[in-house]
Amino acid sequence: MIQYLEAAATGEMSTAGSMLGMILPLVFCGIIFYFFLYKPQKKQDQEAQRMRDELQVGDEITTTGGIIGKVVSIKDETMVIETTRDATKIRLLKSSVRSVDVKADEAQD
Image 1: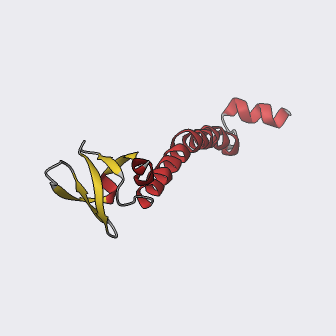
Image 2: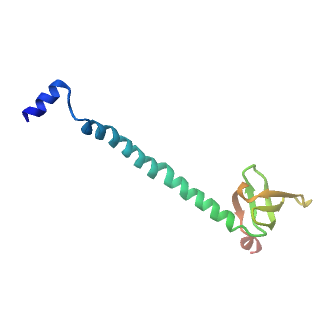
């Protein structure tokens, strides 16, 4: 105990305690970042990818650019949608789909 007090008085404290004091808050912040930011975003990205993978011909969709249309054909990473009654067709990437408004099987009912 006396050696500890002498070391503290002379400033010769071990750096292990101070390093732990610096690293522990960083680890805590990392854990908070993972559970409140990274994990929910990853889940949201997986749900969006699943929605894009389940697209079917006949679905009515909205794109990230605000275009609303009905899916006419689907290929690997692209699709063609029909946007107006004049049968205007637009080729889009699947990644540009924001939401599926009406599923094809629901539109038939």
